[in-house]
Amino acid sequence: MTLSVTSWNVNSIKARLPNVIEWLKEAAPDVACLQELKCVDEAFPRLEIEDLGYNVETVGQKTYNGVALLSKRPIEEVALRGLPLPEGEEDEQSRYIEAVIAAESGPVRIACLYLPNGNPAPGPKYDYKLSWMKRLHDRAQELLALEEPVILAGDYNVIPRNADVHDPARWEGDALFRPETHDAFYALRWLGYSDAFEQADGRAHQYTFWDYQAGAWPKNNGVRIDHLLLSPRAADALESVEIDKGPRGKEKASDHTPITGHFAL
DNA sequence: ATGGTAGATGCTCTA
Image 1: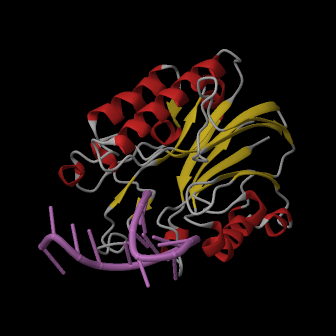
Image 2: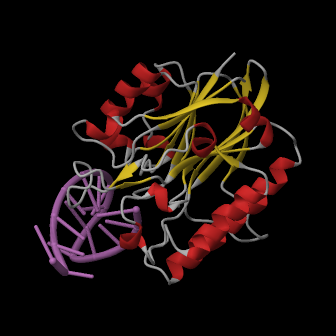
Image 3: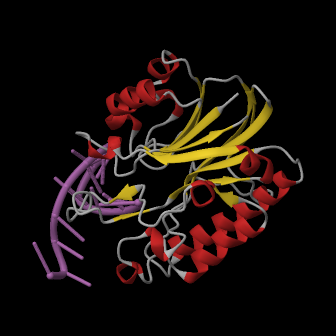
C-alpha cells in the first residue's frame, strides 16, 4: 500500500509534452501535480495523458499559469478550482486545484498549487503573492479540521532556508526569499504542516529549479522552491522523498525538475 | 558581466 505523489512545474505542457510523457512512463507516480500549463482546459493534451492510465483534472489559463492533477487512482471529488475569495470577487489567475483521491487506505486530499512568483518586490505583484499565501493559509487551516491525510504539492516560489540556495546573498530582497515570504510560509507550517523534503531528507543544496539563464544548470546554481506540505496524517505516512534531476538535463527541459513523495497510504 | 534564456504571443510580458 504505497502512494507516490509528484510535483512538477513543466513550464508549458505543449512545449514539454514529449518530456512529460517519457518521465511519467518511467517514474509512473500515482499522482502528478503539474504547474504552469500555459494553456486552456480544451487545449490540454488529455488523451495522451489518459493513455498512460491517468484520470485528469485541469484548471487552465491561456499563456500564463494553469494547474493539472493527474491520478492513477480514482478522483472521488474535485473539491476546489481556485482558492476561495470574498463574496463577489473572482481570481483571474489559475493557480489551485484540490481533489480527493481514493487511495488503498482511504481518501487522500491532494492540492496542486502554483504560488505567485511576486517579483518585483515590493509592488503590486508582491502584494498579490502575500494575499494569495494568506488565502492558502486559511484553506490549509480549514483542511486540518477534517483530520484527513492532506498533501499540498506545488511550486511555492519560496526558498525556505539558506541551505536551499547556492548563494543566499544573491537572493536578498527577492520575492522568493524576503522575510515576509518566509513568515507566510512558516505560518503555514506552524499550523501543523510538515515539509516532506525536510522531514525525509533535509540535506543542504538539493534544488528543484535552475534558471535557463547564465548557465545556472551546469553551474548548479539552483533553488529548492517546489514543495510537498503534509498534514499530520500524511506526515506520519511519509516514507521517502526524491528530487529527480534527470528531466532538467534533457533536451527541451523545463527549468524545474520533479519532486516525489512516497507514502504508506 | 545589471547580462543571460525560454515560452506564448504577436512589435512584450512573465519567469
